[in-house]
Amino acid sequence: MDILKHKSFFNYIGPIVFTIGLISAPNQAFASNTSPTYTVKTGDTLWAISQHAGVNINKIIELNPKLVNPNYLKVGQILNLPVQDMPKAASQLNGSPLISLQTVKQTVSSEQSSTKDPKQKIGQGIISTGKKLLGKPYKYGAQSMNPSSFDCSSFTQYVYGVNHIKLNRVASQQATQGQNIDKGQMREGDLVFFWNNDTQNQKGLDRIGHVGIYLGDGKFIHCSTSDKGVIISDINDKYYLKTFICARRVIL
Image (cartoon, rainbow, N blue to C red; front, side, top):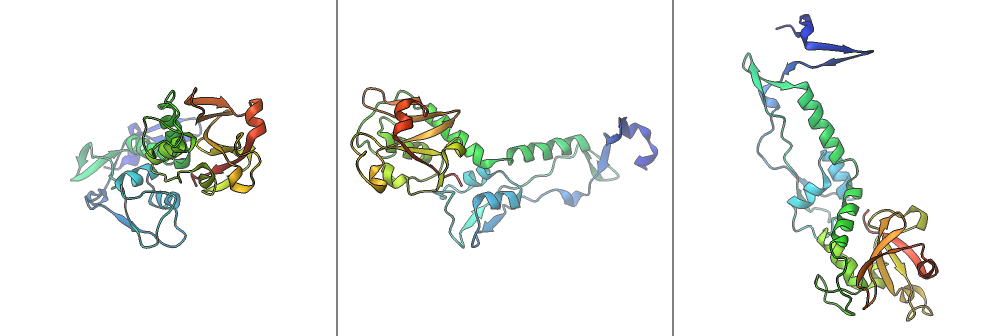
């Protein structure tokens, strides 16, 4: 059938012509069930791999449970990648499957949306995890990866860990991870560091006595003190303006 001779296949809107009919697609266009893999090379990042493969970074993380820290890949490491399935055929024409252009458009649009900013998605996942712990009690020296109680750094370690990112146990050592970020460039999920009464006279990393997670809009979540536990505070509060040291971005 010559589609170009049938006007019912086209709808003219303004200066643009949109095809709304069905087009024939060869049978071989449909993906096999073989699960693809990727071998990590020098300079690779999970973000770059997901963009090259055209898949959601979170799907890669889900398929690789042994990937402890998505920010640190080893050369030669083999990653499982999601199988990219073509849309199912609605019917056939002369033995070939028919695919709706609208279906294809929606599929592509959805995939583009899901891979638009994986870093932002990870940051939002960290925030979501942190907010579920609001009100949890403070306990100095709390056990690592134990959600029943926290001190400031075990809280950030736990929240990041649930989202597949490994943090050091102590606040001063967490401040060595990732990269330094200007305060005005902070985004959701960044770590924020402060001094406290016990560390204000120390130097270097030893001056860091408290850590929290930036939420955006000038707010951060942290495990504060024994009488407050996990709370949300304003980073522009007078006390935190005075004690702020730096921000670090581990989600690279």
